[in-house]
Image 1 (cartoon, rainbow, N blue to C red):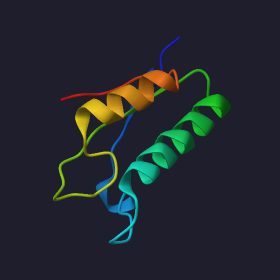
Image 2 (cartoon, helix red, strand yellow; image 1 turned 90 degrees about the vertical axis):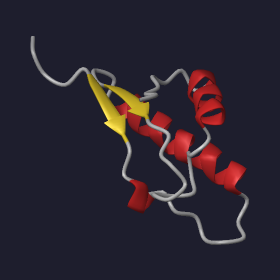
Image 3 (cartoon, rainbow, N blue to C red; image 1 turned 90 degrees about the horizontal axis):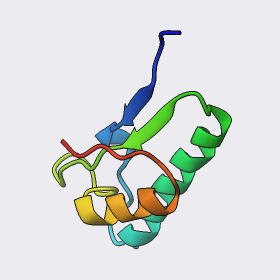
Image 4 (tube, rainbow, N blue to C red; image 1 turned 180 degrees about the vertical axis):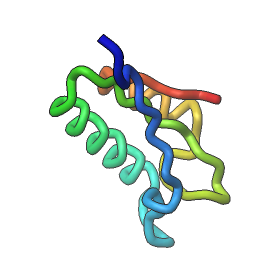
Length: 79
């Protein structure tokens, strides 16, 4: 069967926490939301992608995002 196997989750505009907020907490929340969606769509692997700090301020640390996705049993995209 053909179809989507892996979907990379980027979208910098949607990943901007308000200034002065705890960005590590927002990183955890971002991964938790992806994990909740993953649970509803088990046939497609969701892979969060770290973006640069000019695009957003959540999920920008490659190592931290990799660690959080591993803990949540998610795929990961590092390009």
